[in-house]
Amino acid sequence: LTVPDNPIIPFIRGDGIGADISPVMRAVIDAAVQKAYSGKKKIAWMEIFAGGRSTEVYGENVWLPDETLDFIKDYHVAIKGPLTTPVGGGIRSLNVTLRQTLDLYICLRPVRYFKGVPSPVKHPELTDTVIFRENAEDIYAGIEWEADSEGAKKLIDFLQNEMGINKIRFTEHCGIGVKPMSKAGTERLIRAAIEYAVDHDRKSVTIVHKGNIMKFTEGAFKKWGYELAAKEFGAAADENGKVSFINPKTGNKIVIKDVIADAFLQNILLYPADYDVVAAMNLNGDYISDALAAQVGGIGIAPGANIGTGVAIFEATHGTAPTIAGKGLANPGSIILSAEMMLRYLGWDEAADLVIKGMEEAIAGKRVTADFAAQMEGAIQVTTQEFGDEIIS
Ligand code: NAD
Image: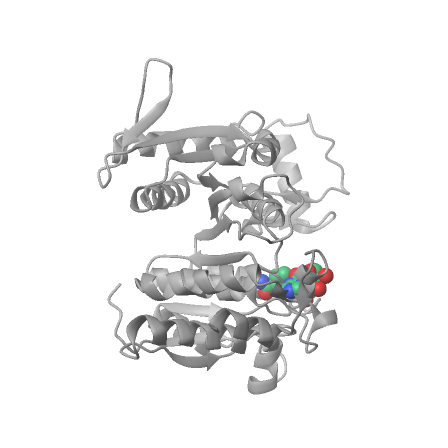
C-alpha cells in the first residue's frame, strides 16, 4: 500500500455510543500521528454515512448509500463505529452487507492484554492471540430457508427423493441452511494467517475446526489449510508428525497445527500461551473472538478489522449500546485500538506504538471508563472523552 503523508480516511461515526467514541478516537490518533512524525504526516478525516446517521442525512430507509461503498473502495481504508441495524423491513445486517459487498474475507481480531484490565481468568497476561476468522463463507453465507417456505420444501424434497437422505427428521416444519466452504475461500484465509505469522515472527498457526463431525466442510478447511502450508510455505512433518517450516524472514520455526473447536475453547482458557495465530471458519471464529475478548477486558476494548483485497474496514467490535449512549460512559478502547491496527496497516508503526503506550499508561493510571472502574480497585471513573485525554497525555 502506497500511503501519502496526508491520506484521506473515510470514517463512519456510528450510532448510539458511536457519537461518543468516534471523536475521541480521532483525537487520539491525530495526537499520536502528530507526535510520531512531528507534524509531517496528518490524516484528513472524511465522514461517510451508514446506519441510523445515514437515514438522517440521506433520508428515510437509506441505511447504506452506494456512495459510502464507493468511498470505501476508492480510498481503500475506512474506520467505522457501531451501526444500528433496522429490525424487520427486509434489511440484513449492515455489517454483513458491507463484508459481502466488498468481499472482506478476513475478520482480524488481535487479542492482547493490557496490564490492570479486569479479567475473569487467572493469567490474562498470557493471552496474545491473533484470530483470522473467515468472513464470507460457512453457515453465515446466508443460504437458508424458513420452515414451510418454497425453498425449504424444494430442498427437502431434493434431499429425500434425489439424494435418498432420510436420516434427519425432515418434516414440512423444517428450517434448513447450507454450509458452504470452498478451497479458494480456505486458501486465501489460511494464506493471510500464515503470512501474518511470518511478518510478525509468530511461533504457530492453529487451524480450529470441527472436522471430526463435519468432514467435508470443517474437515476440508483443515485439510486444505495444511496443503496450502506445504505447497506455498514448504511446511513439512517431522518424525513425530509435527508440521512446521522455517520463517524466511527471521530463521525461526513456525508450527502449523490444528485443534477441534470445542477443545480449543477449553485449552485457550487453561493454556493461553499455546496459541498464537489462529485461523477459523466463520461461525467458530465468531464465538472464539468474543470468548477471547472477554478474557482480556471484554468488547469495550476489543479491536477488529474486516479485510479484503486492497480494501479494509477497521471497526469497533461492540454494538451501539443504546442505554449508555450520550452519557460519557462508553469505553472508546475498541475503536481506538482498531484505529491502532489501521495505523499499522498504513505502515505508520511509530504512531501505532504511541497509541499502545498511551493506552497502557492510561489504564495503569486507573482513570478509566465506568466498565473498567467498576471492577478495578482504586480506580477513578472518568468520561469517554476524559479517558481519551488520559491516553493523549
Ligand atoms: P452492544 O455491544 O451494543 O451492548 C452489549 C453490552 O455491552 C451492553 O451492556 C453495553 O452497554 C455494553 N457495551 C458495549 N460497548 C461498550 C463500550 N464501548 N463501553 C462500555 N460498555 C459497552 O450489543 P447489543 O446490546 O446486543 O446491541 C445493541 C445494538 O447494536 C443493536 O442495534 C445491534 O444490532 C447493534 N450492533 C451493532 C454492531 C456493529 O455495528 N458492529 C455489533 C453488535 C450489535
